[in-house]
Image (cartoon, rainbow, N blue to C red; front, side):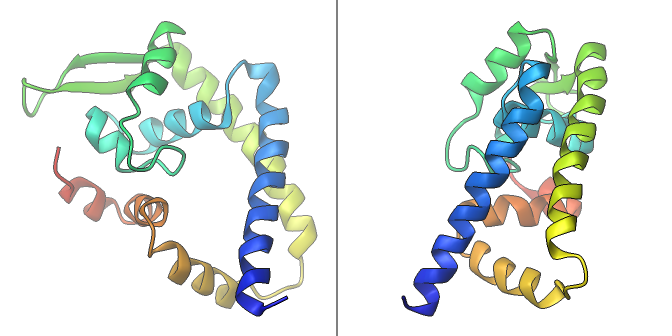
Length: 159
């Protein structure tokens, strides 16, 4: 197996297993990993317009997250209101119920992070992270993650 082929399959394997573990943690909460990501992004960066939210999501790159948001609005977790900066836009934010569920999502994510930590304890990760960023930054999902790391870049994004 070529080195780059192995890298691709290792990333795929880690992503699938991580998503499977996270989905199992979130199932009792009644949400999916994609819905949990929306809650996290809105809590960390909101309120946001639909386009701005879409620019920060890894789970829905290149697509409008409108159906995903519609489901969260229907569940009473997200609310739409007139944007305070530009009344032509709707701003998305968490409801009280969404904020409460967000705290439970963080707990579920922390359990996953502890599992990962147990697998990499004692290993230097800075070079691994730098390599993965170099690859991810070449794709829309990596760009979305970069915008989440740098809030100034996220807010400079067009509506």
